Every structure is written in C-alpha cells, then in structure tokens.
Length: 369
Ligand code: MSS
Image 1 (cartoon, rainbow, N blue to C red):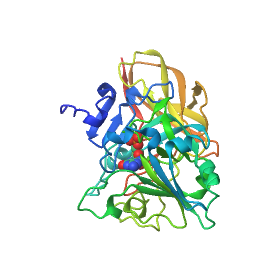
Image 2 (image 1 turned 60 degrees about the vertical axis):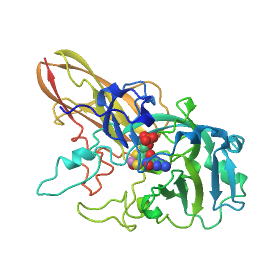
Image 3 (image 1 turned 120 degrees about the vertical axis):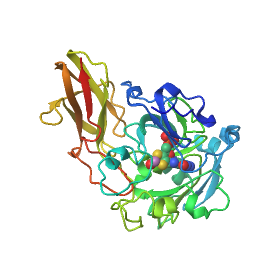
Image 4 (image 1 turned 135 degrees about the vertical axis):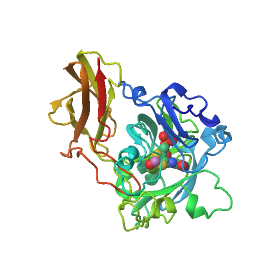
C-alpha cells in the first residue's frame, strides 16, 4: 500500500494511528478505532473542511468571539461571554459528513459514470457531546423572530480565498426554522473548549442534520425568509441523479437517515464465540432496534444495545454474541428507527454520493481461523 499521508499541522495533535488522511481537509476515522464507549474523542474524530480553516489566533480570546444575530426584532452582535449568560443546553449528536459511505456508491458505478468526492467508507462520523446556548433562548432575548423567518442560516468565519466569487466558496447553510427547538450555539465539545479544527470558539449545531449544516467558527446566525444562495446550499449538497447538476429545486442534504455499521471483529477472529459489535443511530429519530446477519443478509438476529442512551440524536453501541465456525463469513447490521424506518439493502444512488444508508455496502467479509 502507498505510504500513509501525515496529519496536516492544524490537526498534528490527533492520533495518527486511528486516522486515514485522504487530504488536508478530509480525514477519516479508522473503522477499528470507533470503539464502544459512545463518545468519539477529538484525537480520532474525522475532519472535513470545504475551505481552509481560519488561523488559530481566533482562539486567543474565546469569550470575545462575536456572532451577529439577524432576523430577530432586535438584531445584535453578541460575544460568547454574553451568550453564556443566556442559557445552557447539552446534547449528544452524531456528527457525520453527508458523503459518509460515498465509496459504496462509487464501487457500484459502471460504464464511465462517476461520483467525485472523498471515498469515505464509515469513518466520516462520530458521536459528540456539545454544550452551548439554545438558539431559541438567544432569539427570545433579542425580541423574538422576525415574523417572516422560515430558515436558520449560519455563516462560517473563515477568510475566503482571494480571486473566487464569495458566494462560490462561503460556508453558509440554511435549515428549516422548525429546528429552532434543538439548535444550539456550542462552545464546548466532549468536556473541553471546542478545538479550532472542530469549529471553536463557537459552532452552530443542528441535531439530527448531516455534518455540513453544523457551521464551524460561526460568525452570523440569521433567521431568514429564503435559503441562502451560496453555492454550498443552492447547488451543492443536493439530491440528484448521477451526472446531473444540483439546483435549489432538489432536496437539500438535511436530516440524516437511520444507519449502522459493525466495528468488530475486523480481522483475526477465531472460531467459536465472537462478540459482534457496532454503532447504530436514527438521525432525526431515536434508533430503536438493530439486527445482525452473519450470512450476508440471508437471516437476521436481534442485537442488544449496550451502554447508556445519550438521547435521540446520539448513536448507540450494540452487541450480538455468535458462534462462528472457521471459514469466511459476511457480517452485516440493519437498524430501525423509532418511526419504523429500516435501513434498505441498497440506498438509491445519487450524483453527490450523499446520505448513504444501505446495509449491504458496509457489510464485512471476515476470515475466521
Ligand atoms: N463549517 C465551516 N465553517 N467550514 C466548513 O468547511 N464543513 C462542513 C461542516 N461545517 C465546514 C463547516 C462539513 S461538510 C462537515 S462534514 C463538518 O463541518 C465536518 O465537521 P468536523 O468537525 O468533523 O471537521 Mo460534510 O457534510
């Protein structure tokens, strides 16, 4: 295999043993490094940047970071210190790139069709605990929403590369205003101030929504009548056919679908009793059930959840003890959410390779000795 790429400087503190560096802006957690203690440590959490992150000097005065709040009756710019006085919420969410699992779509393409983008398998995802202020409390403190608001629009604080149209590169995303009940502006991740790489000093978290909607180093939060016309919203991250162009008329990559994958055993399994373990989540809904197959999906058995339930936006670890004879086995998992949505065998293919949730793609072929 080619030599592993080194970690770029801004994430040199991460654990290289647990990560696959696709590029400086796309770093995936190894499947065997996901673990079963639910919370993904920042030393191994995946990274995805659409443009270069800001300099780490923005962390020099975290409490002094300013965010403009617009689309409310009394629009204002607030510091993180002021936000800390307005309320507190803690939520566990699955942070997952919209393109997680893209490789499984790419692998199925024939006849010159192409899906470009990082070939993530299962590792562009983690489960993270965030603390911050409920956006609703901020809006109420500023006189309430402007009557026409239909979306929450967050803007990233990076400096935009010169020579390009700002709308083509700015990281600005809109989500439906119904999320006002769950969105938080977070300054803490897994018990520490949020690192620059993961969006410190302040990040907009939209629980249940795919990664791109969770704006790092957020500098503006606006309640807007329209979705932003930034390219990342208008034509990118849209669901459309292979080879087609994105447009605002297509569904945006917002709510995450139900999903699961097995994380062990990956290799070195011995004949006899094996513990098949993995993670499962329902995206917007709680995950209610996981089944495991050791015969490539011919038959299924119910797995048990292990560990605490961190809430409907988090993932749960699962286990199924099985006796495996020597030989080759195809292990798969299939989750169901609280609304009865079940992972399909195959997700419908789409041109951006987004929102993969088929169970066949991440199935594992293991050699038991
Ligand atoms: N934010 C900002 N500001 N910038 C950028 O670039 N990206 C996205 C999100 N946010 C960005 C932001 C994406 S796209 C993702 S996934 C996420 O983020 C990631 O995260 P981390 O922390 O892991 O890196 Mo796909 O859907």
